[in-house]
Image (tube, rainbow, N blue to C red; front, side):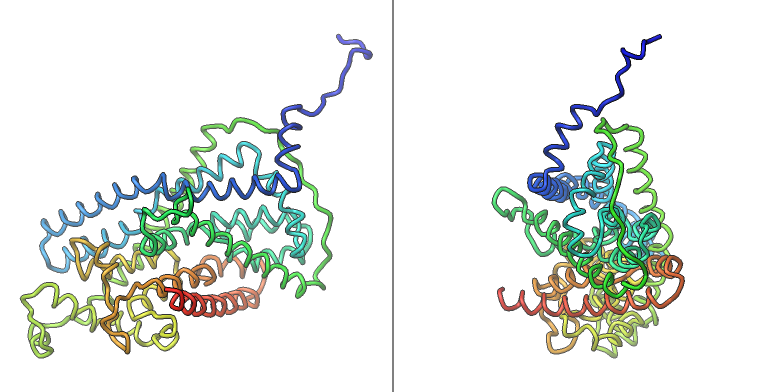
Length: 443
């Protein structure tokens, strides 16, 4: 046994103290945090691009095989165009999803995310929030649902309300496939900003815009919720720095990918089936096509005729007046409306529309699309102003039925989720209109 005089209480780990002196420094710590997040999004594009290309080639080969085996009837079109064109168009972004969660899990395993909350506490105090709210907002980068549920740990009712109402503005993983698709169409892969890839820089900027918008919204709601409680002092236990457990990291990545795949096989599959019917009904006979001046023997012309006279086209044109100032035509409108179920459905919808126009090369067909009707008929659809408007719209719009449901449950009434949907849609429309106007002026 040790004598009392020989006892030494456990002290702080010197390595942790030395690292914290740098990483928690008021100025240097903030710069390091910014650099880590910037590298975060560079990696998502540069590392995932080859994997994404392989998945795209695989689904292209699979679609061609299905068309060859099943023919050009409804069965072949459904499997090759709807099933593989829609779901495959979303699964192609699985590498980005996996990388996103891999890096988040590594940062959390090392013990850095807790430090990030302390680094952000002083900054977030300017918006009426504390560092604990940063953890909820950061969770929303994966998905707004766990981010909203994580607000239960906030001791202040005022902070909880403000964080819940702003969490959906954080750029979640559901937006990532949409952003990657649109940024890839907007910026060539070879484009650079200094030594950095331009695509990664734009993606990082989109995340920053979402985060700053969330903080500004939180500042507004902390004022609205002044009567619901006062802000309390911020405290949090910082874990020691450690080497992440490989098992824990891999499980976290697998769990996130499994959740993404579950959404693809449930929500997106159901939506894809519905879209296939909307895009191909009502059925058109050869006589209908001849009466409209279309040759039924021409597969491309007949497919374009069916698509342009489908129920989906009717829906897209019905909401046209709302989105026409943003440069959207009925096909983009259908994608935006369908994305209310889940944001990734936009990618599946556009993939399905493109595959209907050119089953052999839907990616090229998507970029080559022309405006179907209206004063811009015949012009290229995905111009830089239109892509900029879409990016801005998806930064702000609340396009997730599940998130609305969780907001209802956590807030205890429909008042706050309906308010969230209304103010975010308004923000999305105004931001998209400004983005289109500014981009058109400078290009």
